[in-house]
Picture 1 (tube, one colour):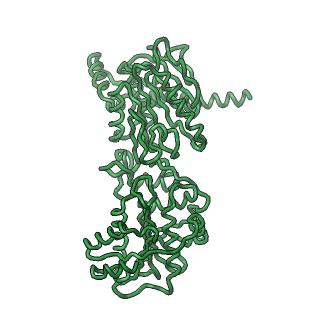
Picture 2 (tube, helix red, strand yellow):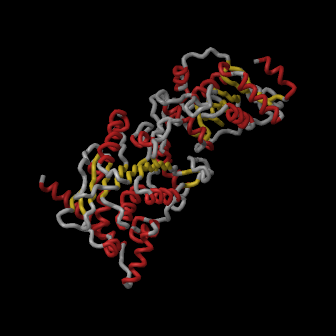
Picture 3 (spheres, rainbow, N blue to C red):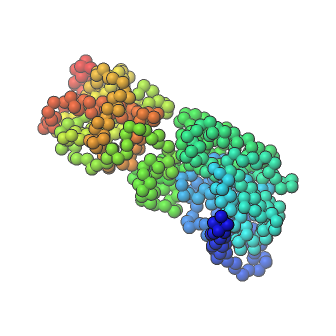
Length: 527
């Protein structure tokens, strides 16, 4: 046993030595006069960006992103703040908020102590160890702000600097009550990656952890003002991070007085919303390219990539598997034996409602290719525009039938189709699907007879389309996922395709797909 312990201790000591030497090499001193030194320090203390690059350049290999600058500014300017920062993986949340920012506050005389919490004590000690190493070996920091090491008060997971500032590490659930050094209570607290894969599966334990953060952990900080910072990405819909923010459901209000920053690895540069399309740009464009993010996601797998880079947890179902939903390069539309668009709308347009799902399916031999899809929680007008946009993909010499669930064919929806059709000069001829459908879950599950043989295929050109992603997520999560309108529309379309006799390639004008204004009354009465 002693041999194993000694080998472990030696390994840890050697790792510590390597870290020490790395920090020392990275923080050399320049010659300067005392007045030059004071002027330099004064300038660095006014700029977090310059401070970070001068003292901690060994952590920094690119400029900070807009969200780093925005969020650090907010926290620095507010000595009494509760912030939840949801950053993607490898976007410097731990380095900045566990190491650089607290030492910036310390150098400015604003830190009375720091607590750091993580999923377990070992992880918390490792994270706090980065701060500890900098205070011992960072030559530049020590040269400007004095010796930090304090003999007798320097332990793994707890230490006090020479000027009396305490640092503590806590695993989730450990009691921080009474944490202070003399009269100084820690006014900077961070909970970093507090969630883990086991915890989030038990909502009762998630709630207990939230109570611990807001009660024991935050309660150990001074009432007169403190900075409480949460760091993590949302690995589950009902994770601790999600419950801290409060927006578990899309329309749920966020926690009052919380500063919330949510960053997506690829985003629309104007709206800052998630954008996996080719137009999406890296949020940290100073460090990453779009290709690098996509490459990492592809290696991780789509489900894990969404969780790590976009805070989206996909419920893993037991029916449809990723390997049974192949991506393919689809045929030119004119080469398919049969074509159909099928619309499964929902009643409401709120964020909590069902999805409006429209699919364009082409049948070739035994295969059903999902060529295009519209799958969103949206208003009726947006759904109708989506259906017309899909209809525009059909060549004029092809027959394509357009169906909508009969239970949903209401005057309001039809009127929107007519209104948009009149604006465009041609109207989609929507047919009602009056089939008396059996149980939805059973119908969708029956698609496994096709998916397990790879007969339902997905257009690889739309691999990063938000609509196609949503459709596949609903398949993969079935039956546990919250929504199944996408798979339901696919089932409806395939059922109708199988009822069509022969091939409907056609060589005419495709009037079964669209019609002019003069046919309006005839078509309406046919429904």
